[in-house]
Amino acid sequence: MTLLERGEAGAESSWAGGGIVSPLLPWDYAEPLSRLALLSMTAYSDWIAAIEAQSGMRAEYWRCGMQVREVAEPDAALAWCQAHGLAAQREPAQSDGTLWLPDIAQVRNPRLVAALREAVTRLGGVIHTHCAVESVSSQGRRMVAVHTLKGTYTADQFVLATGAWAGSALPNLPAMPNIRPIRGQMLLFKLEAGVLDTIVYRNGLYLIPRRDGHVLVGSTLEDVGFDKSTDDPTRLRLHAEAAELLPALADVQPVQHWAGLRPGSPDNIPIIDRHPDFENVFINAGHYRYGVTLAPASAELLIDLIEGNTPALDAEPYSWASALARSWEK
Image 1 (cartoon, rainbow, N blue to C red):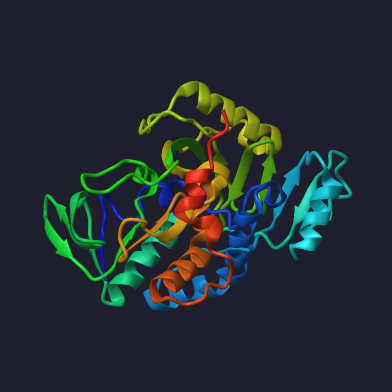
Image 2 (tube, rainbow, N blue to C red):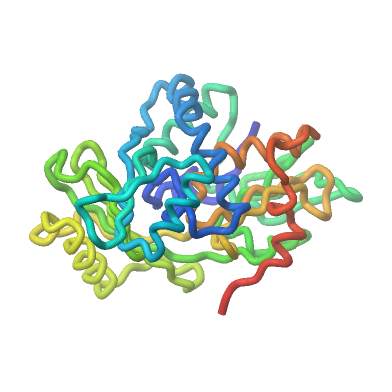
């Protein structure tokens, strides 16, 4: 296997995200996203264990649970969780519709990415960084080569997993439908270990603790193209809202403020399909906020499509045609 990466491998949305292994409000998404997410969440512990065993590195998978505050319709949310096999209960000490999801886990994205890179290399894969594809060559309905400034690469099968750039067309290769970059700004704080030991979410803002005392705060949703800059008003707002949830953050300054680009897609539903123009090209893109969450199930679906197996779930919602039919809300 050869991987061509336009920058550093795993340094875009995979590295920049928080690593919650669940949709933020599991009951608040279209069913195709939920099915893919729940399948991934069930497989995640074993998936991480296999990566760690192969790489000899830790990804810091932690089933720390998630507290969701101010749920608009807690009874409906609880009913959804029960119907989908997701553990959930009311927090009796809270009067604002707070729910506790004890089985929600997290992973430390940069360390997961490092472990994946090492595992790929140990399995014989080759990763070429700073090697953006400039154009492709084809014969009939087969792609035969991709061309970069570092050389030309041939293969029997190709997978396009181009993240936030998936909606950008290349010569001889159409853009993937309805995928565009969505910026997210985040803050990182350092507290004493144990000050926060569970994920906390309220009205679009989340706090994610790490075992060493770091706390991630995020995130914004900004449709600003490929601009990865940050701004002080957003930093101040995120800090203030985070301190409302965790007062210990009020008197400390963030140690880092950064932005990443998500591969935005309507309803957060990715495209996992054979390319409509090529019989030997496959797509795995458009996972929006949940690329890390959806990784195991997306990979399994992709492998089934490549090998001609019957997938474990209906693949139609993740098809190119379905992506064409979806649209962004105004």
